[in-house]
Amino acid sequence: MKNTYTNLSAMLFIICLTSLLLLTKDLIAQQKIKRSFGKMESITIEDKCWQLITLNGKMIMGTSYTHYLILHTQDAFAETKVGCNQLRYPYELNNKGLLHFKNGTTTLMACPNQEMEELYRKALLRTKRYVVNKQQLFLIGADKKILAIFQLVPIENGHSFVGKTFVQEGASSYDPLLGGAPFLKFESKEKASLKLGDIVERMNVQFEDGLIRMRSEFHSHPYLFKIVNNEVLLDENGITWVLKNK
Image 1 (spheres, one colour):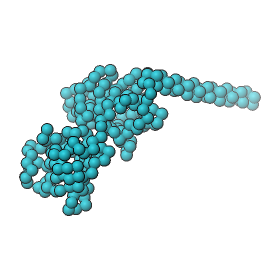
Image 2: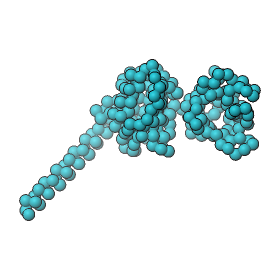
Image 3: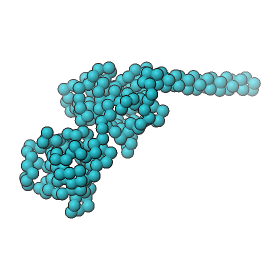
């Protein structure tokens, strides 16, 4: 019996010591990151659009439409893209800077630069932490190396949309008259014309947190568009709308 108690005590001591070492290691890692980045910002990284600017130390030439990351709080999925295929990866994070991605789904288009896409997927799965500094998001691996850097994309308030017209991507023609391609034209921050099918409707418009909410003046059906950037919108069906009159 005495030997049993002794063994149990030894096991408990080992467990407590292991936990203490892991906690100490975690605190040391946090201090190293703080020293590397200086004063870190405590802003939320979710429900914002981040443009990829660096991957594995190499500059990325892209836009907030072709190379971006959005962490959606609604379903805890990351929506991201690096030029071609769109990825949806589940993620977990906390306010202590921990961030983990898990394998998810991706579109299966034949892309010209699939090597970079594969490197990016590996970087996501290797991510253990994140840091926000000067409106940039840093993804950090277990070895404390920076895997990717993103730049925050400013939220659109509607001023720059006035006078612009968007059409569905791939539409063969644009004509504001009946028979032309679907379009969305902003006459002001509060009013727009939306053509779906053969009907042009006058819409009341509201901009909020990277979204455009619209409701017809003649019926109560709402429409929702997500602002990717000043030249690209996504509707609630996942269809891309691109700026026509650049």
